[in-house]
Length: 184
Image (cartoon, rainbow, N blue to C red; front, side, top):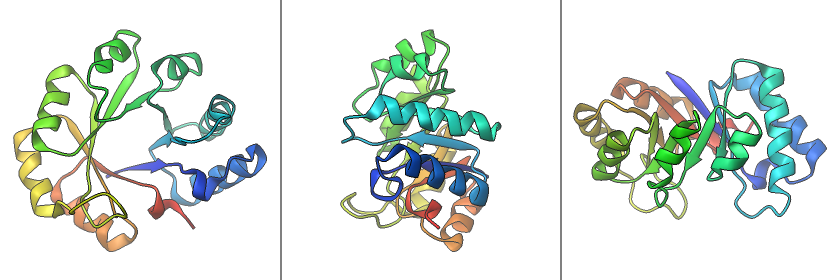
C-alpha cells in the first residue's frame, strides 16, 4: 500500500532550515511513496515549496506534489499537483502540462467525476474522525466506493496509527494519506 505524506505548518514550521530537517527526518523514518507540500497560510510558500522539492529530489523515489498551484508545480518540476475539491476544472490544465493529478474528494460522486475528468488519484475523506472534517465515512463506505471506481484512491482523514493503516490496507485502497501519522 502506498504512503502519502502531507506537510503542515503546525509540525514542519515555516522556518526553511527546520522545515527541511524535519521533512528529511520523516522521509527517512516513514519512507513515503508520495509527498505533498501543503501550507495554506504561508506567505513564503514558493520558497518552502522549493525546499520541499530539494528534499524530495534528494530522497529520490518520492513522487512530489504541490498543493493547488499548477504553475508552481510545473516550474519546480514536481511530479504533479494536488487539487482541492473546488478545482475540478484545473484537472485538464494540469494534465495538459504532463503533471499527475491528485484531487481531494468527499463523496462517491466527486470520485467518479474526478475519474471521468482524468485525475490520476483521489484522496477520499474523512475515513476516520479528524478535527473539523465532519462525520467520518468509515472503512465500509471506502470499500463500497472502491467497487464503483477504477481511479486510485488514497484514504485520508484521522489516520494516526498502524491499526488504522492496516484497516485501510484490508479495504483494497491504493494507499493512505495523512498529516499526523507521519509525525514522529
